[in-house]
Image (cartoon, rainbow, N blue to C red):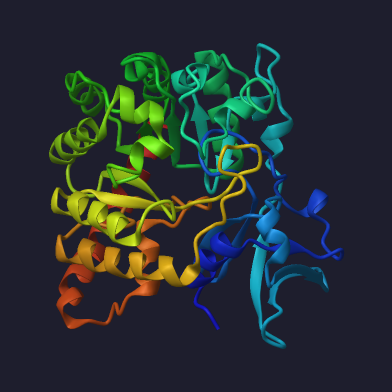
Length: 396
């Protein structure tokens, strides 16, 4: 029997099927494919509060040994490889704010989407790489904007959507990301950040391509942004241009590395993440990227490649669990060795990817050398929880 973290990874690699006993229309969040990246499946919660977004609509999921079943009012996940082996699954209800409209008449579900326990906002009209037909080959954002998402989002629309999500779920974090905007990504995202900071003490995360002018990062820190992430995607410099031709041509690996190194020092340990997609390059390259970021004090969001329907790589098989698990084991060791804080900010649960803190499920966390660091991080989490609760209380 797999632990919750191992099961989450296996679901990413194998997907799952839905039994006819399930009533997802009324019991679960609807599977709306929005934003860029790895696609959108079914959100639910495993034991130990591990959130997962499991692939369902992709063809490979039809061969999955996992079957979601409903019985006696409860959901559980059957592993049909073993008789009587099943796992608890708690469905997440469809957000009520998805049915609301902004004061401008736009459905709020076209402004933002719940990503795990927090709302995510994609701010750019369309990634410039899609316009130039040099988009990342796994990305689906160009298939979504104008369909499941509106291309233009006014500041007031984002603020109203945030208020509705926060009221319903008591969210403590909001995440913004954008596509390539010819060096103006932070400039264009700035009005939304200012609006959120004016009226709330919530934590704010920003994910956009690295800016050539690094003084923008000093401005973000001064504004009070809490977290930055950079989607390098591929560490291997030969594979990078094949998967991400626009990023390789317009930005290059070195700009990503320089931005991660600079902001890690500026924002502090654990508050900057590099993002890498595992399964599109040899595992040793992914591990090498994790090691580099860890030496600078940054964590890594290690995403499992998902062949999203409609993308250039929709026919590429997902990676195997047996090849991915050692990556997370080594990542945990690297983060402990380099004293990179994991999961310090409270109330943030990510379903679409493995969170760095979930790497503990793959490692021998009882190793004595880690004990002191785990105790230190325990007290850091306690202090962070008190700090952010106070900030939210004072500003709303």
